[in-house]
Image (cartoon, rainbow, N blue to C red; front, side, top):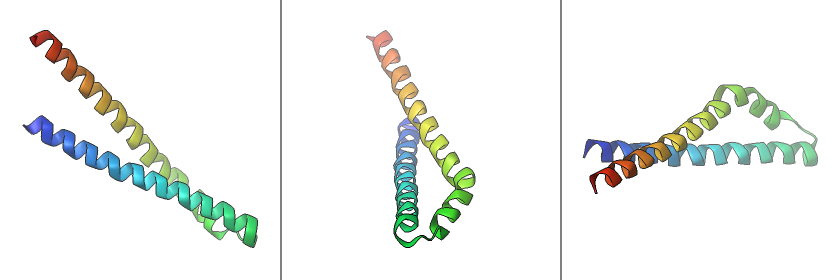
Length: 84
């Protein structure tokens, strides 16, 4: 029961992280559009500042979580095969 609750929490965190990364990509797109249309790089400059501090760790957490979920499912399926 505890493992199942932990997996739900992990999935919830991954969903949040996916939407955060999509937000970051939308912000990047808005910054690129503002440079192309308005010739103003203020949005893009702020995005560049936050890239190593916020967005790269978010991508790392997303990848680590995806690998963790895959490994947990593989271990669970191997345990189910041994029990059969």
